[in-house]
Length: 416
Image 1: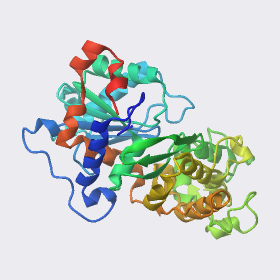
Image 2 (image 1 turned 45 degrees about the vertical axis):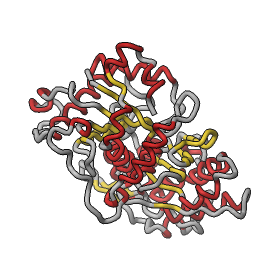
Image 3 (image 1 turned 90 degrees about the vertical axis):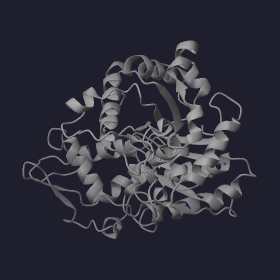
């Protein structure tokens, strides 16, 4: 973690960097009006670096100090249940980083990752900050990642930071509870003074992937004899568009188990409403499914296997997993909502109500607010952009020389 060594013990250097990062964050990074980070000066090598947020749905990459990534592309294997093999990832990492480096120096990436400009851009001069989705990932994964990026891709220096902490940085906070609703999972992490608190990091396997798969199999298509849609009839892109454009979260009063009559109407999805035209001209009608789909985030139902925790349970358990002395400060800082799956219409108000209900059952005196930044899907990348652009952060890079001297384990020993 930023401010907490992954393998035990607090780290004063990274804790200090956490404080510096928050003080240095410009207002525009937190969604408030204000100037962007200044562009790196010519020849300022300490700020010439890349930031890669390798999410499970989308990879975002760009030069540090920017307010938005220059490259966004679908993550490898994002429609599959498992991540692709490491051999395939090497090519993907190299292509994404080269395209971002090319864009940073004014080259063209219009022809995609395999364009001539991107291929000719060397990565030997581009230290890279990667985001880490889960602080409890196996040590062996980081060691394999170090080998892939130093030996295969040829990076000169590397650093890894947790996504939750970076999302918090992007809102100008040093403490708070981050709820990251991602593609493959949802995560809640309590952070105090830049430190991810032990016992207060929780994960549920319910994310955007499960919701999209449900729409592919459960939505009626005009002209189809079956209520369940075959994958050949409703492709992945159509299901994603339907989820993003038509689905909405029911208000607290309507969001009850079983979705009683009136729930769909409460979110504007009455009978016959909510349709998406498919490429072949047929119409995809959602009806009550536009409310039933995101309802899974508030209580994983049988059609998703009934596994996982609801968003409100994740927040409550993460907050109560923090030391009792830390809880008032966390409540004051609030829950920062992040991730692409958090963008459903109506989700913030419903989540706020559900969290208070969950907390009232255990600790009635605790009340916690909800921070809902703009462009929540970019929070992690923006936090990394802030951190990697700071002069003091340059002392934290794990260099290729470090790797050659100490081996892959150096990434675990020296990274945030």
